[in-house]
Image 1 (cartoon, rainbow, N blue to C red):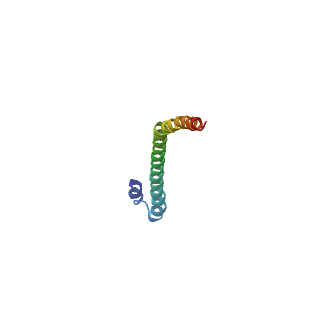
Image 2: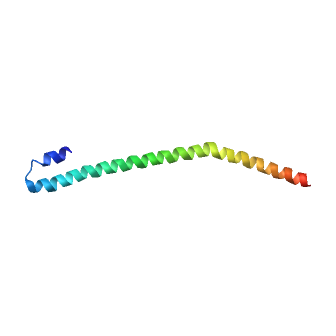
Image 3: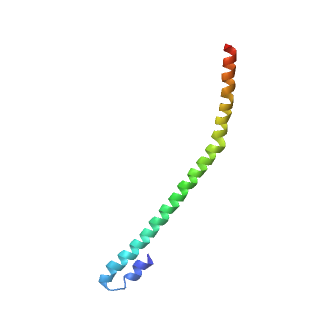
Length: 80
């Protein structure tokens, strides 16, 4: 915002071009920073979710899969 105020001291023609470019540049920088922060947060959330899934859900799936062959064996043995 300082660049916009400083550029108001130059003659009228330069006010429009100068302030537009400097203000839009600062706006672009702010937008880029916000986008980068959002992307970083999304990546962190995805990594946390993947870690939680791997740590919590996958072992339970393996426990269930370990029980399934035993259950199938018991079914087969009961029929035989």
